[in-house]
Image (cartoon, rainbow, N blue to C red; front, side):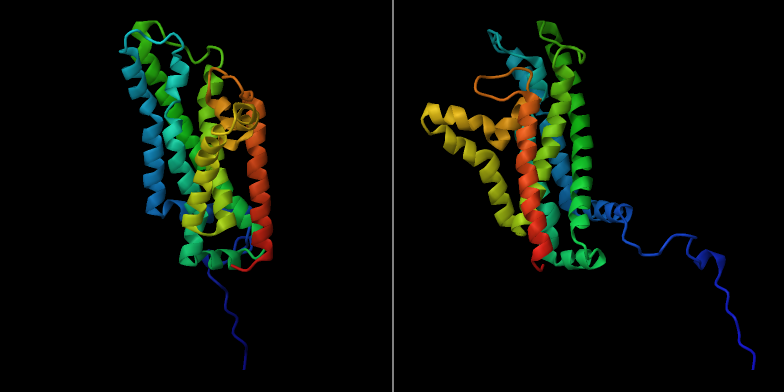
Length: 273
């Protein structure tokens, strides 16, 4: 009896040098991209953040119609004022990017596909940070040019090439991406949506209020190094008293994010899901 040899169809053969199902950074990024956009809350949260970033346009329209116009009014700062409202939506979404998988149990499938675990976390961070940065960058530029059109009749307009203008506009988008990364780090650490949101709200918004209630000698020394205050100077045309410079503030904020991510990574490696 002769043996029968079955030759697979060319379309069914794996491409040369390519292992089907192999876990690669590219595959993980594509997987996280798909998971991010298949959740309805992602689209709604990003849309809310986008629209809130544009609220600086309304603020500018109200302020320029006030009499007299405040001498310290800066149309550059007004154009990015919406980040104060939008960052809450991004922080909450950052938490839910990872806690949602823990709530549904999908994280088990993700970690079974990538047993080394940490690449899953890095892929989540990369995808969410990139999406947030691009979305907020578009909103920030739209807000800037719209605000300049609103104030043009009052002699307050600035060009994007003016001092600090481009840095402030881009800085607002970087700030939002940083807040998203911080939210994801907190979510990876707590693994619970309610606990993660509570923790990030306390860190970014409640803690500065508590510190401000302390004697000024203490609050003036501590406040500049709180995460929300440190990075705020990156999205500001003017530097207030007792604040860090834009790049020093970004470095301090990055330090907070790095520490939280390091602790979350250790917990992800050492503890079961």
